[in-house]
Structure formats: C-alpha cells, structure tokens
Image 1: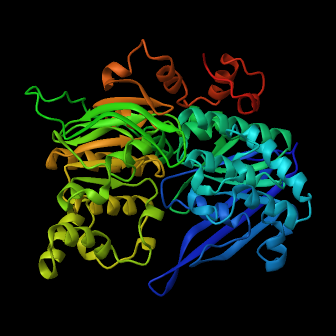
Image 2: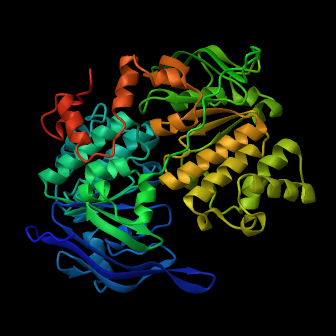
Image 3: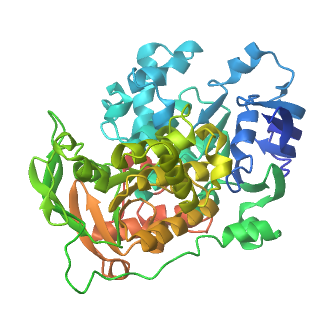
Length: 556
C-alpha cells in the first residue's frame, strides 16, 4: 500500500530467494514487492511454508542457511542491502533493524544472565554506558509487565517462564530503539492475558518512537490488532495486500477467504464413563515446590479418563507445566500423589518401573527444539519402541513404518530424513509418533499447536482426535488457546498461581456465570476486529495503549 504522507523506510522490489535442495536451486520467494513507511506496521500472514519468515530475514539483508537472494532490490532507508558489504549489513542488525524470534528459549544463551544479553547491543553500538543500559532494560521490562522488573534481568533464561522470556526478548529488540523491528510470531508462546499486555506495549512503542514493523503471524485476530496493512502469502507468492479493515471485511481472493474460515473443527464433548471406571490418571491434592523456592502447586486435583481430553488452561506461571512435571515424575510432590488406574505412582521417575514410565508420554510445544536435528526420523521414533518394547531389526522397522502411517506420513519418504528437512507441522507429527512408540495410555500435549499456523494446527487436532478414538488414549492438553479448548476438550481445568480455581465439563465452563479469572481469560481472546484491543483496554480503564503494560490493569 502506498502512503505519500510518510517517508518510505523499506522498499523491496521483485524479490526472489532460492533454496538449495536435491543439488539444484529452486525459487522459494517468487518476485515479492513490499513498501513500508516509518511508523507503519505490515502484517505478513499465510500458512506454514508461505515464505513469511524468509521475507522477514531478507528485510535485514539476510538469507538463511541453504538459501540465497537471487534477484530483486532490498532498500532500507536509502541503502541497497543486496549490494551492501557484510560489515555494512551487520552494522544495521540489532541497532537500526531488530528481530524478535518465535522461540525465546532457543534464542537466548543459557549461560548468560538475561540483562547481560539485553545490554550487549547498546554497549556494542556505544549508545549507552552499562548502568544506563541496565536502567533502560528495567524500564522496558516494566513496560512489558515483567514481574520484579528491577530483578528479573539478573536471572538466567531457564529461571523464568516461557512467556516471561518472550517478553524479555521483545524488550531486548527495543534496546537500541531501532527504526524497524521484525516480529516473527512473538506471542505464540503467550497466554491470552499476557498476550494483550505484550501487544499493547508493542503498539505503544511503535507509536512512541515512530518505529516501523513487519509482524509475521498465523493468528489473524492478532494481526488485526497490530497491522496497518496485511499482505497474504502462499508458497512464496503474494496473494493480495490491503489495508487491515478492508482485508478483514472484504478479502478478494479465495485463498484469503479460506484463511478467514479456518478452525472449523470442533468435536462433540464426551462424558465420563457411566460405569464409574477408574481414571487413567488422578492427581490428588498435590503440592509442589522447586528446591529452595516457594510453593508452586497448591492442593491440585483432577482426573483424566480413558478416551477423554482434559484441557488445563491458565496464564504463564499458573502451574500447568509444573503439574505435568509432577505427573511424569520429574518433580516429586511435597504433598499428595499421582495415581495410574488407581495405583499410586512413585513420586520420582527414577523409582518407576519401565512399564510405569511408558504409560505417560509427552508431546512438546516446540518441535524444533524437541527433536535432535542430527538424528534420522527412523531413530527418533524407533528408540522408544526399542527401549520399551525390545524391538530390533525388521520388527523395529515395521513398527516405525506403522507409526509413520498412523501420523499420515509416507514411510518411504520420511524414514531416512532429518528433522530440519521437515515443515513445522511434519515435525510435530514426528513428536506425536515418538510418544505413541511407547504405547502409552496417557499423553500430555504441551501447547502442541501454538507454534503452528491455523491450517496446520487444525490438521494436528484432527489427527490427535482420530488417534484418541482409535487407541482409547487419555490426553492432558496444556494450552493457552481457548479456540483449541473449544475444538478438542471434554473437560477444562483452570489454574492460577498454582491452584485450580475452576473445573468441569467444557460446555458448562464456556457458559456463564464464570469464576472471575475464567471470565478474564475468555474476555481476553482476540477477535477479528481491528478495534478490539483498543476497545478492551478502554473498557478496562486504560487511557492509552501502553498503559496496560506499564500498570498491569486488568478486568475486575
């Protein structure tokens, strides 16, 4: 979209990017144009493999490993990046162009404190002295509503939650006050209430410092709150571009209309077995604390029955993943117990039998970091089958082939491939197959769709539903996405500050009256309305966009 009233900051013309595969270069970005003005936000949307992140990287003059910028022009504030020297491009990155990645856990150095990594940019570019950079970091932490903003930066990345780490990375990107920020799915790991605070703070900083942004996301409701214009991509080509309101109200292309219509899957709610049979997993009055720390779980209790899905929802730090750690024996409870089909499990996984261990498996949120990139798919899936079932040779290969068939991937095409050769959705399917290889009765699905675009996520939910029906599996579904809860859950457990504040059948949980905290979660789900976030903040008594992040105001 053209805007003559604002200065053009980034201009991309005829961009072609190629990837090297099977000994040949093939086009993956096929002649895309883009114009971005100072202070404007452009949303890039499209399914997995559309080229969103590749274009975001190209805006910094960067081509990912195995790719090259083959044709076209990338002009940033008058500088042609395709012909600039490596030194010139590096001087821009981090100072005038910043990047916020999707996975904060994979982006931070685990050996260094958060604030030391934050201040590295301002010190390197001599924008601030160390103490000034640290004070600025604390101010940004407060804007992004991180807890204990004057202290949290002195922790290591593993000592904060995933949502807190994502906000810390957003603050780090803003440390040099760049002209352009590339946001690559920055809120996919965040719960809905935290997401609102981060989105509000991002909008405030963009407005306050006249910063331009490219906002890459698969969440259409989020991009509606953030972008002035939206560009839709498919397989490396532009489908259409329009102002946000125009795009939401009247998309012109069939593909764009199909994106607007996704997440139609919603299976009927199942009731607990009428025969009163024992739950597969029962959590009974569990308290838990980490070494030397305060209590993180307080009297947590719920059941998961065979063939049913219990969704556990709540904000970052509410205790969802900690509960999963207790169930799997990674964190022994200080009080209470976990039962498998009525029998108490040893508190620590070290004391559990091999059969007890195999009964509870996990599928992780970030398939990129959950799969060893140097191990073939056949070994990723085969090792648990060998460990738990003793399979070797031809029997093991047959079992791996069966598991690949179960997750709807052709064995002959995927058996000898490596994780980096797969798409995000395919990697998540491999994670599912790895869990199934142990032949468990119970699977913990930890945010398994949050990193996926909506079309791919729907396919994963349908796959999990079919596997549950075929194998009579019990699922604990940890999620912050209430659309996912509506799609697949039978019962819902709402957690806050390590406690269960409400639980019951899904249909009842989505009908008022709600517990005030449940009502807060439901009211915080973004809607396909560009004015939704502004209206919500006004209803909650916030006068400007950033005030929510600075004060932490929430619905009563």
